[in-house]
Image 1 (cartoon, one colour):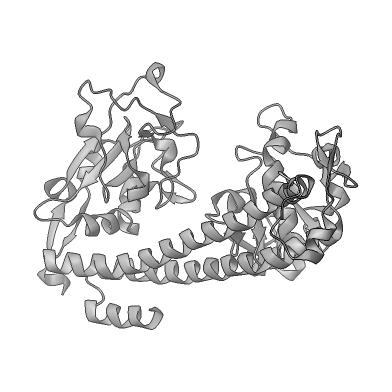
Image 2 (cartoon, one colour):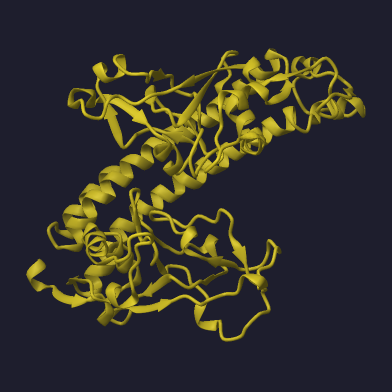
Length: 440
């Protein structure tokens, strides 16, 4: 089939636009204002809006061409590739409205190139290899619009492009559905935690002679009044203490890198990079693995599943996940294991306290979390029976998130296997459709 395809340069079949130099003095804080899509917002296959800047909705001044559309393919032009992969994404409806900022490229299809197929051309290993071969600059590697346009690839007919985009898009849609479901489930668990242990909603309801809406045995465990404390009002009878009152802390280590027998074994070994690049609640796989000997003869140790793991040092200090299985880790992270057999309550507590953790961190180059950070962090300590009651309600939600995370990994592996074979013509569309049916 590949012999029937035509070799083209990307620039000949693509509408490419680079962004506008929006002035920072005109940024606004209005959360309803359009977001500015900068290179910092482009991750590997997805847009992330952490720290998004916003532009006045009524501003014009020639920015009309820079409004983004659903399906547009985005590519960072500064540091276009990092160890996690190529910084590109397709714009989703939820990303809009948004405007394109300088040093970011927007690509759209043409009468010869379907934009859905274009997404997978840019996401291919061949395009990544092209970027790595042409990027210039040492401190800040970068690429130009002309270099992007110079990429050559095989172009099938529009019908075949759309069929290929449909197959790969179906897998992406399943991945996105699982991702959104996971976000919703975690949000439900965290909202319940906040209601019980941050806002003290059942206590306030009882204090105002209202029904908390809970089973009577559980209602009886909540007190009916708030009292003053060093942290403000808290439920009567609840204590204040360090977060380590309900958790034990574990650190990691790194086997000697010059010992080949310490590496590439059966044990997942997590680093700050793995934690930081995890797209969801759970980390289920790592970039590197170690051997049993590497585990025994180094400072690292096995960290049980469902421990909360926090990046302790580096540019992503405070980023956290839960381990979805037993694994080891290096010294850039701390793991916290619940001592009350309520790991999901501990995770929700850490998520609620993460800003306090980072604020308490210290360091000369990057903020650094130390054991003293956890020791000094004082929190409200609910009674263990209430933590267990929360755990009973939250556990099914988090276990469904873990199941979805594993499914995402399986679907992504299939997509990444099919992608280069489909866009090069190595595999027939009918064969790919049969594989897709197997995971439907």
